[in-house]
Image 1: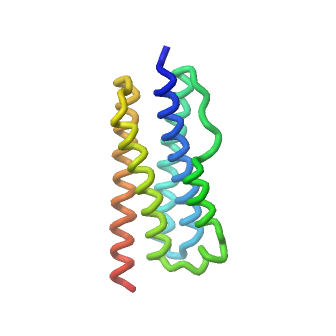
Image 2: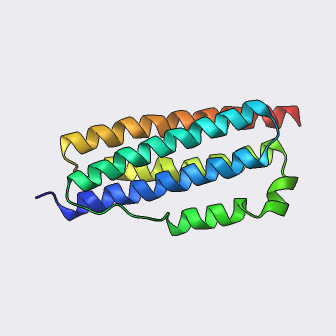
Length: 150
C-alpha cells in the first residue's frame, strides 16, 4: 500500500494544477491580444492535461482525487474573477498576476520534489514541474516585454 502522504502530495499538486487552469482561462478572458489569448489557453490546456494525469495516478494508488482548488488558488481566482477589475487591466497587469500564480505552482512542485516519492510518482512530478517552469518563464518574458511597451 502506498503511503497516504504520497496521495496527499499528489492531491495538493492537483489542486494547484486546477487553480492554474482556472487562472489561465480567466487571464485569457481578460486580454484582447490574440497572442496572449493563445498563450493563456495553451497553458490552461497543459494544466488540464496535468490534472487528468494526476487524477489517474491518485486513483491508481487507491486515493480519491480532490474536487476543488486550494484556498490560495480560490483567493487568486477571486481576485482575477472580479470582471470589472479584470476588464480594466492592461496586458502587463494580467501577465503580472498570472506570473504570481505560476510562482505558487513552482513552489508547490518544488516542495513535492523534496519529499520521498516512489520513482514513478517522482517522474510524473518532475516532468510536470518542467512544464510549470516553462509556463512561468514564458509568462515572465511576456510580462517583461509588456513592461517595456508601457
